[in-house]
Length: 453
Image (cartoon, rainbow, N blue to C red):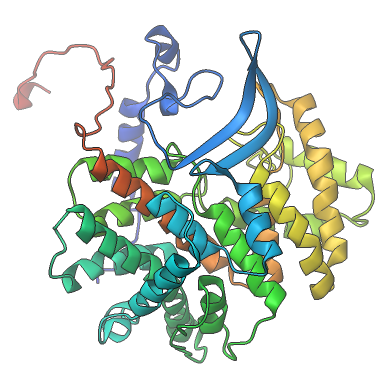
């Protein structure tokens, strides 16, 4: 490999400046031509681009013709996510597999159907011969989302019917990927740690009798041990991340790429690339890093004025990473509350007690209470601000001693169920290729011969 492969040379820097200069667009033109930046209205609401039966997000009510913010609600196939979680928790069951079935097939499975579905996933939790050795363990990436995407794309080569986009074949492919995502993510992480950090390499095979959450902890930890509470809370986190409307970035990517008629592996790899972004799937890492910085710089975590001062300094770009963002606060849709954050918080306190980290839990709760008021006083916002699911999910993963490198892959392990449902829905309702319009605003110019430039 050339020494210049990863370097930005002075020549490239100069060309980049030229590129930036000629890429800039006058912001006033977006208003002039009524362009919906990010496919959103001025109030942040997404522009309707399709129909779905898979999930629904409620963040406001219409009262006398006006949009009034309300407590957030999330529905999977018309069923309140709170009822779903309360249902399997009250029956002392794991819920992710049941939710995956609900999202993909559109109905709640009975006991026999759920047992058969779990058996299908267990049978699919087997990688092709030598896949770990030849693919995952060669040139391991420091970013597990890249490793996951590469592994998914490589699966194409092992599939004799990779380009068959009939619904039965696509369903088969998506169920296989749903079953294999935990293995691809964890094995990729373990290979990287082995070759780059000289750590011992543990490759535990999955167990057919374990749930997705249990198998994740089983294959990740050297001794394969975990407590019931750890597995149950990880399972809840997977359930809450499994789906979130057709308009989120990675799910919309799934629809866009599916509409082009491409194969399942290319489609899911594109969704993974979208989810990798810190504005989408990587936000909970920033939350954890922000709190680590907070704990180092606030003498008394229980002192409201000290915590508030730190949050103000964040907004003023004087603390943490200088972005001016209090990570984990606010959401593109929700205003008063994110139902996923509320559900997850109800389990976080139990885990903090088991882990002896109640002081940190109290700090999270304090920030959750103070941040919305501080943000509203110092920022012009069109709707309320509340803690989102990333606010507590990072803390959960941290208490489970999960490596930061696997936080976003865990999101993908959960969201593959939603991506699968949306890809199948797009295939079942074929339409034209998705092609939004862009208004051209470049002025007309004459062609200048090379000798005269």
